[in-house]
Image (cartoon, rainbow, N blue to C red; front, side):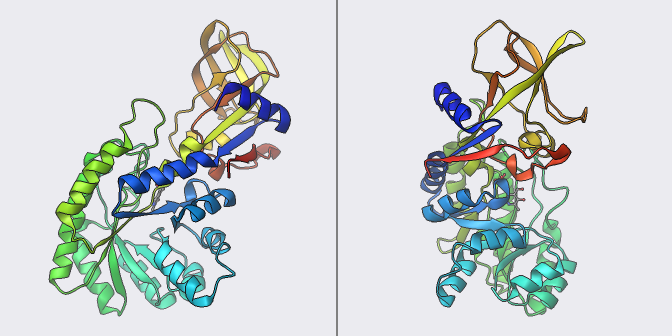
Length: 378
Ligand SMILES: Cc1ncc(COP(=O)(O)O)c(C=O)c1O
C-alpha cells in the first residue's frame, strides 16, 4: 500500500494500526487454486483467525483447517442458519480438525458433526473410538522439514514405518482411515521436502489400498511460502512440481487437499506503529514503539519471523534497535534495523507482510491491548 494512504489511515484511526487488505487475501486464494487445480485449499485458521478473514475466504469457496473447538465454532457460525443436511455436508466436506491431539471434551462435542480429524498415534485412536466414533480419520505422517522456517517433525507425525500397523489397528477398531496427511514445516522454501513427503505418502497409500483399505484423501498440509522478499522462490514453481508429482503418484479420483495458512494471509497486512521513546544505549539508537513481541510482533518469538521496519521520513540511515512498549527487557523486536537516525517521538514506522501468526498470538501483557485492526476491501 502507498505510504500516503497508510499515513492517512493511521492519522484517522490511531496507532498501532493493523491494516488487513482483503483484496490481497482474495488474490492469494485464487492464485493458489489456479496453480493447483487438483487441490482444495482448507485455510488454516490458526494463521489469523479474525472472523472477517474467515468470512472473506468462505465467500471465495475455501474450506477450513481448524485446530480447536473455538476455531470450529468460528467457521460454523457462518453456516449456523443453514438446513441440517446442508450443514452436515459442509462440515464433512469442508472442515478438517488438523490438530493430531484433541482433548476428550472437544472430541465429545464434535462427535455429532461427524468430522474429519487427524491422528498420529495409537492412544489417539483409542480416544477417538471412545469419544468421537463418527469421525473420519486422517493419519499424519512424519516427513522431512529441513530448511523450513518452523519445523514440525519433532512434535507431529507417525513414523512411516509404523503407518501400516496404525492403519490396521484403526480399521480393526471399527473406525475408518480416510487418508494420509503431512506438514513439511511452515514457510518451506526447500521444495525437496514436498517431493520426499509425497513419495513417502504414496508408498503407504498404495500399500494400504493393496491390502483392501480404501484410503482416498491425501492432505499435503501447509508450508506454502509467502513472498516476504524476492529471495523466496515463487509459489508457481512449487505448484508445477506438485502437479507433476500428484499425477505421477495418485490416481485421478484421489482427493487432494491442503492446509495453507501463512500463504493466504501473510502478505495481506501492514502494521503502522508509533515511536513513543528514543534513547541512545551503548552508542546505538533505540526506537521504542507502541507495539512489541508480546503483541503484533509475537511472530518474532513463536514463528521465527524476521521483522521489517520502514520509515515514512527520509534521513541518514544507521543501524538502530526497535523495541516494544512493555517493561520486559525481552521485548526487543530487532537489534539491527537500517533506519534514519533523525526520527522523533510521534513519528510512525510501518511493517509489511505481517498478516500471519502475528495478531493470532498477541497477548494483553502489561495491560496493552494490541493493535487496532482495520479491514479494507472486504
Ligand atoms: C496441521 C497444520 N496445518 C496447517 C498449518 C498451516 O501452515 P502454514 O501456515 O505453513 O501454511 C499448520 C501450522 O502450524 C499446522 O500445524
